[in-house]
Image (cartoon, rainbow, N blue to C red; front, side, top):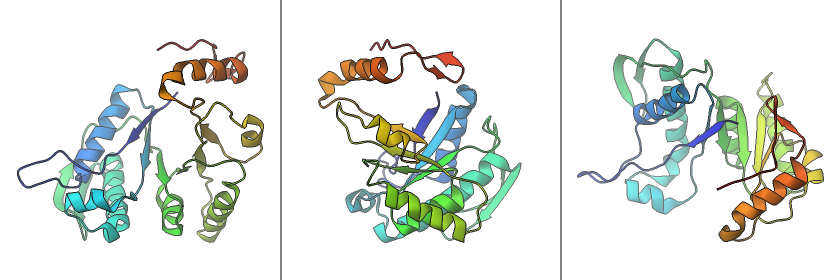
Length: 223
């Protein structure tokens, strides 16, 4: 089991108002989590979709993609290089050392979004792509486009694909197995109060007797 860490768009309010999180803060939070977890972090990132969040931060919504790209660039260098100096359009700092490094030499980044810009970002900067609330049928066109962009970029590695299935007790397990998606996030319940029973039922029906990372999967789920 891996730990999934999603970078929040907004920092806490300060006397100067809310602001987008600096790469130092995000990189340190992720690196710390990777250290204390023994190297099990997978980072999910996205440019966001809600203009109100960016307006509250005092940052132009139209520039969110460029900001995410430079943030990822800075974070990667902080995680992997012994000394980093950066002079970009949005962030600039003199030579700094960033320690401790993450346990993982290449920390997995999964990029969300379905626009061409987001898919290109996944190919360019990520180890994986994340899509939300798809069916096996609806995700097919996105996977095809992702494959096109990967080939056009000359990328040799294959992205890990993760998709969230629509919430509800009926999960098309057979359809997902045939879809080509690597991982599916399921919420097999309709209402929050039914979540635990929904997970128990899903485990009994689909996970009993299987093994996860070398260990048997038990069909018991407790809160």
